[in-house]
Length: 272
Image 1: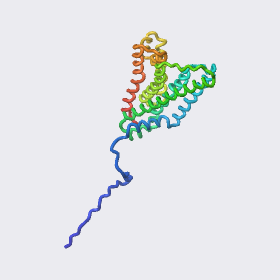
Image 2: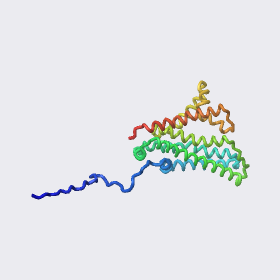
Image 3: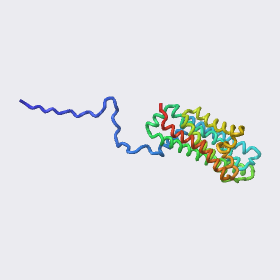
Image 4: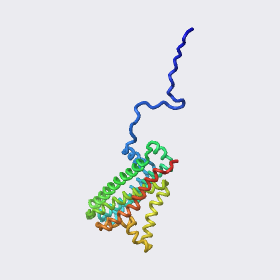
């Protein structure tokens, strides 16, 4: 009688049909927030639509500055040149922010984004920070181009140098760009559809401004809730305490509220 020893084969850890696991240590933490913000910044500008919008904004600014340099021998104050650079940015740059949010839902890349970073509030805040970063760079660029154009008018066209600019006017120029971007991002997060967000961003504040001007019963409310009206005193150089309160109320309604609701809703929306 003989004893037979059977040696069990080592179990095969590889799962049939699946690739081998990647070598190396596994990450111990999530995606850094600044990296998320950098990715969202690329989504705003490193796309065909984003690039062409930025090119279009530059073309409009160049045309406006050219008109000012030619008209009346360039005899315009620095405030006019600054307005020629900030207004196109304030009107068109928010569309870039809208596309950065809505394109993920229309092109169905949101599933990839939230798979790589499941914590949706971090993604939403990264988009907001990226929009603010683009706005800050746009404001600084607007001031640089406006100053360069006014300096060229003085040096080459013989215009009188008028660099006087109220401190609140600087705040107003920056506010038009930055608040417009944040408002657009908020509408985009709420609606997650490019045409709807663009229409809502341009139509709703404009319609409310018209109602406040044409309907007598709404004029008092418009003094507190019309963002275009409450920002006008910034460019005059002086604001009373009541005017500051009106500005804060309108910013809360048209900027903070859509942005807060948009961030809340994007964390709960179904990703398809």
